[in-house]
Amino acid sequence: MHETGHVFHFFDAFQHQNLIWNHHSPMEFAEVASMFMEPPGMPYWNQNGDGVYDEGDYRRAVVHRLTSIVTFLPYMAVVDKFQHWFYAAAPEAVSADDMDTKWAQLRDHFLPDINYSGLEVEKTTGWQRKSHIPDTPSYYIGYGPTQMGALQAWRNALVDQEQAVKKLSSPLAANYTSTLSELFQLTNVRFAFNAATVGELMTLVRNEMAKHL
Image (cartoon, rainbow, N blue to C red; front, side):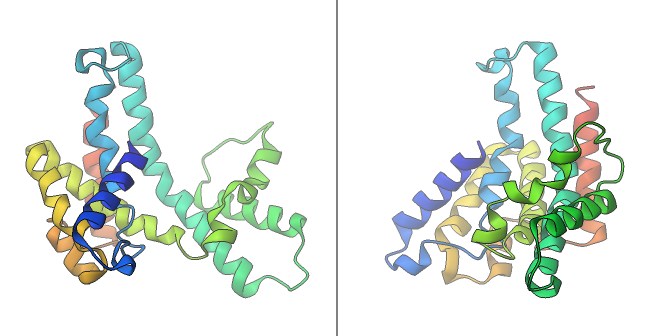
């Protein structure tokens, strides 16, 4: 569902933008469609929605997906903080062991309640499995505001899914012909990544999760 959102984004852009450099959007908006597609797709996982899960597995899958939205935000902070350290503060002769140590420290700081007993290697070497770090430095922090935008769009979809999906079409087609704030306004959501917005949307996630516990 996530990658399908990117497909919709690109097709809208290709159909409406003649200039190739307008086919893409600012990184802080690039994941809105993909992240938006995830929660509205959940009802179709159930066998009643022509999906593959029976009721018990469906409920567990929904809870897992919503939980991962919550835990993603501190994980995003781990990646972003690690990149800032690696590119701006790490010694020139930094070693893989140094990077393992820093990654583990950041995981302990931002995700302190996870028990890694017996999985110490997996914990410390997580930076090796993030292609964003060498490929697109500073991109990962963009997932924060885009997640907030996607969750707001999902909240709109819970009221009127058809209308919420239609509202995505204009900003997906606009891309670099509009400012970042305008792209969010076209989606009928706020461009915000502050305590009030995060708290409000985490309450939404918690309430929706409670329906499946």
